[in-house]
Amino acid sequence: MPLHPDMIKVIQAMESFGYRAMDTLTPDEARAQSEAMAALRADPEGDAGLIIENRTLPVAGADIPARTYRPVGTEEQALPALVYYHGGGHVIGSLDTHHDIARHMAREAGIAVVSVQYRKAPEHKFPLPAEDCFEALRWVAANAAALGINAQALAVGGDSAGANLAAVVALMAKQSGGPATRLQILVYPITDYACTAESYTTFAEGFGGLTRDAMVWFQDHYLNGPGDQADWRASPNLAADHTGLPPALFITAECDVLLDDSLAYIETLKAAGVAVEHAHYDGMIHGFFSMAPTIQATADARARAVGALRSALFD
View 1 (spheres, helix red, strand yellow):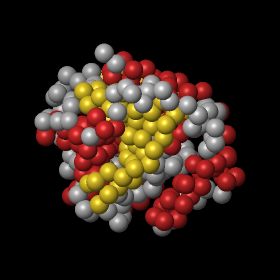
View 2 (tube, helix red, strand yellow; view 1 turned 90 degrees about the vertical axis):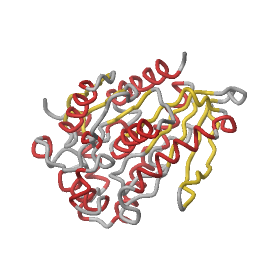
View 3 (cartoon, one colour; view 1 turned 180 degrees about the horizontal axis):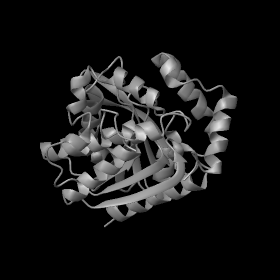
């Protein structure tokens, strides 16, 4: 299927904005571009009805930023919670670039959301971002009462690199005996950092910002060397055992270099007996989950995520 007309407009808008290919930029330049593009989508009225607090979470060797969200009127309740990890190839992205996703999930699902800004590459290479994210989940579970969160009703989720981290955190929690989670939301995840699947050729360029060259750029900045590609903490599809993982909601875009690897991970989880729900969007490009409110597929995908959260987290 060709690009959806909405995605053609998005790509044209990126060109009008002066978008520069990721692999031509320094990490700081790429971060600045990402923040500027997110600011163009910002809705100043979007925080209505929510209690939003900035805080820090202690992890090994640092305190990392986090932001908590919950609906107004739930202050006395212990809410189910989603721990969310932002996308950006482990190099770019922040609490601010993913503010709209986090607040949408909190408001529409009626839950608490803890958005985590893990340390990023190349300053902090693999596996530190994954370790930060697992420590963040452990901290949320350990401090659930003070946060007004039900520690028995937790989910992890993210998009792109954030979905990679959510999948890895679910594996880490399984291997460590907790914290238990009821759901993993994986929005077009990186599941194999070899970056060699057929979709890397099919959608190499011309389908938005995540080109094959951009993924290689992320790979070079995040990993210490080629040997890290085979480590399941970078490539969760390569873990030895996927049994016992929480159910997963996958959201995938057709015109995405990551598509084939996402489909491979779906099959791996199914083969291990993990319950998988898959919502696939023809004609969409990587990043469409952030394109509210103008893209109908975005609204539909977010509704699927909200529905999965409500089904999994409320008894």
